[in-house]
Image 1 (cartoon, rainbow, N blue to C red):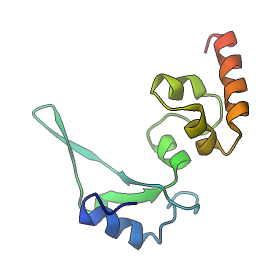
Image 2: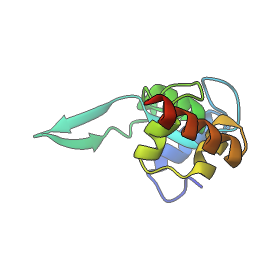
Image 3: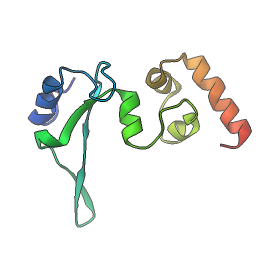
Length: 108
């Protein structure tokens, strides 16, 4: 899963025992704690001390999207499928779609 990336990304996942450092669930991503920018261009800092393993939900929280299941419209606007959203929040795809329709009706 992590092998196509920087060697330090794999090392970070191994260091964290493939567990999310925030909640302890199985990790799915390695998050960059900070990013550096040079001349306005984003450059990832792949040093080992800048990388942590996270599950999808905690990764979304770190990026400020929100941890409760009331931000489905924001996730859909970012291009995530209902299945991906359902996986993040551990609900069925149908439940994610129902909440999305409620958010649209409420003008969220």
